[in-house]
Length: 197
Image 1 (cartoon, rainbow, N blue to C red):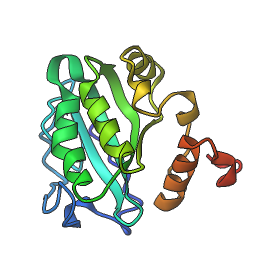
Image 2 (image 1 turned 30 degrees about the vertical axis):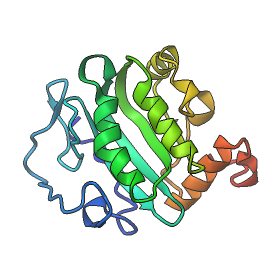
Image 3 (image 1 turned 30 degrees about the horizontal axis):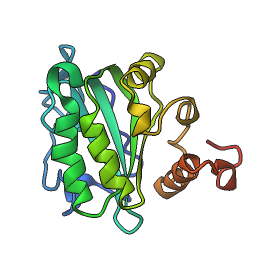
Image 4 (image 1 turned 60 degrees about the vertical axis):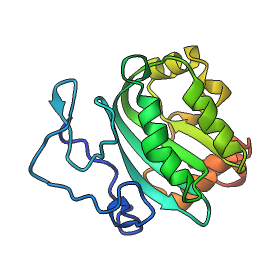
């Protein structure tokens, strides 16, 4: 796992540690010291910790004019034992929402497991963003992760599932990826990318 880096090809457009409005502004990273772990495996030091012992993330793009963020995740999302959603909501989402972010694309292809609990924080997150015309989507969830999220009833608050899986987002610029996800949320994907995502 130590060689799985957060997506870096957009770093010429955005770096969260250099964004004064980011929760991770001013963070410094080592390329050589590995300290964070998932399942006793070290993960790449570029991932950001936010309070969870098992889940890490990287804000790989944020656009305050269009009010969206693309966040990549890695690890085990465990609400049942560690209340990871509370940390995500309080330490990351609330702070980004305070800066005007209301549309969240969460790239979940490296979320290896999901253990749900109650849906209170998801409902709060949903209510916060919908009030501002926003939305939340989880992209590329693994099949067993998708099923556990569905069993936890997250589909009431979050867009995820088959329509949001197998998305080949990396070749695209972040704004095009966002426009495609916005169109997908609103059932209008073909208007933007006829056969690319």
